[in-house]
Length: 113
Image (cartoon, rainbow, N blue to C red; front, top):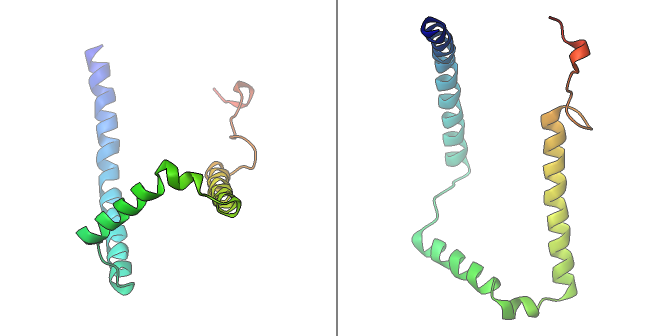
């Protein structure tokens, strides 16, 4: 029993070690691409003042008295934005599944033993 466990553990360990080089390489490539985009676009981390300004803006917009003053147009715009976000989520699900409806799950009849 122990030798079976050790053999199984060694198999998984060998698979993980084999994946190490491609993962490290792809991570380095992604970091270089991100660095190039960061410098080309002139991006910069937000300053402390920008963080506090964003926090204040968020706190002010979430106050109940401000929510009572919303017009129908503001609520409609928010609804459209939420619908867009949900639609992008659904499109991502379809792309991830590579199928329009459901996942392609094979039944036991199609499995070869």
